[in-house]
Image (tube, rainbow, N blue to C red):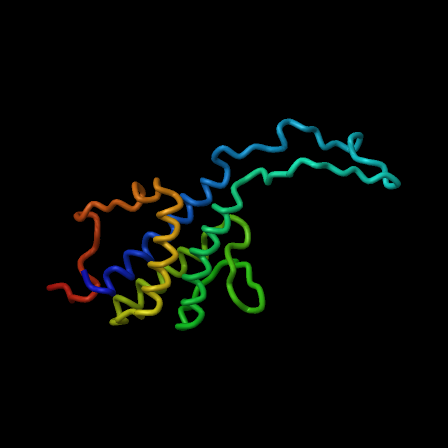
Length: 167
């Protein structure tokens, strides 16, 4: 497997990885243990309630951050290399930080853009490969079930990206 083959595999796996990570946001997460936050339970303006218990988010922020990191790496490389893509992203100081909402249009658009480039002779980028590999490996260590998702059947993969097909 060449570096371009590995890079394209990482790129093509990104939408599935993001779906998986975003699904982990709600696994074992629950709202504030049944507390009803209606207007009748709010403290009056002249009295501020304090609590010594730690408030937990109703979802896994680690999973949300991991999904956003996957989007961020791919989109920022798309910006750097000039891949044209559509969709909404969250930016801070001009740098993509993650998805804006739960629409993966931008991810699919980036996958299509990089695929088109590879078919037209793009040879990949070693720094991009290293960064995508690093982010993906970090997430594979944190979520062991991600490896099950990333197991590929060889017959389902396209031919090598670095070797032209015979016609």
